[in-house]
Image 1 (cartoon, rainbow, N blue to C red):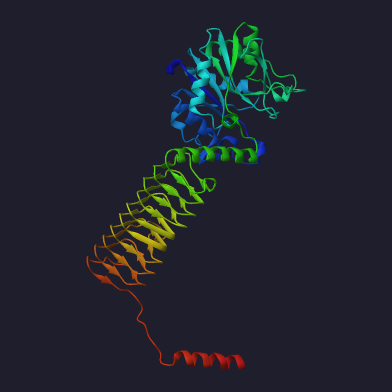
Image 2: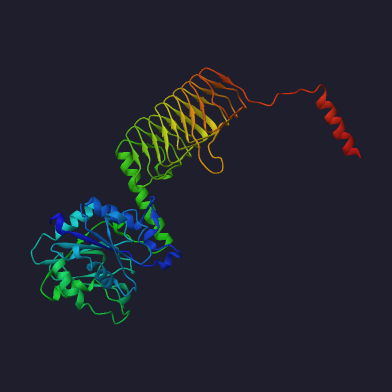
Length: 448
């Protein structure tokens, strides 16, 4: 099947009312990516680049792949066949070849499954439809495949809303269709509304094609890939499927997960081999960790690049954090939009934002870079071999040059020259017998 002749239609115009959310179902997320964008991402990975997404009007800009798809609208939901008709108004879907009809709430279908599914369509020239099936005997909300006389073929799909008595000896449920475009164009106009619901079902294309003498087949894939989302409970189940798959992927690539079930990944997390990740770590979007790094427990990392460094425990790396080789980011340290160079140490209780920290610098406990003045963010530059004493506030914009020192408890508002020692404190005053006098005054007041 030539790439140029294949296209995909993703049905994503539903409300998802059972999620009890103001956000349409397909824009809820798994692994940091919406259900719909998971489908688009996997379709693109299968080298299918002619994609039409059918949405309710007003949601065009919620997809991260808006520039890679064509958007069509379904203004009134009257069934899946009507949804496909909305997509067929796109001229690119009217040429030869095949069209995948996919559901925006079945997010974990893999590129490998999409390609294997397409291979079934090649088995016979008279094949017109290939249903994507899964064995789910108790999924009574899904349409069931009706087998034909020959093995591997079907003659229809019974939608759950129309079934008065499901035959549970027929376990295969429908999760999508692959249809020859000429057959789709020929029969979609003949689909009649259901006498029970009044909806137009795209699955009727199987019955119509079968009755016209075409062969309709099915390809069975794993239920974990093809499970859909209608409730919050099902959303959590798919999140678990996704996370288990990611954990297996990273461990197979040489990553040590000390307690795999406690580590959570984004869909785009990149971790090289020989990285150790301790329990209870969460990765957000856009994280790359190089070989040899160690992520200690209870860290949250997003938008960060980590070389062979030690992070945590209890550290937070926010977008724009770049951590160099052999750097140490310790407990209760937050880094945002900053580059921490090799061998630098920020061991505890610090906030470093919009900053550059040079090689071998040591940032004492309780240090903060004051990067925001209430209107704008400003940059702090901390040079190589700099020592910042504990409980210091570095008020940006400011530069602390190489080999300089900042005394503990200082508030730094001016640049510090190379090799200089900066001290900014209120002078200490010791009052002789002051503590005793304070206690006497306190006692006298208590007695009054």
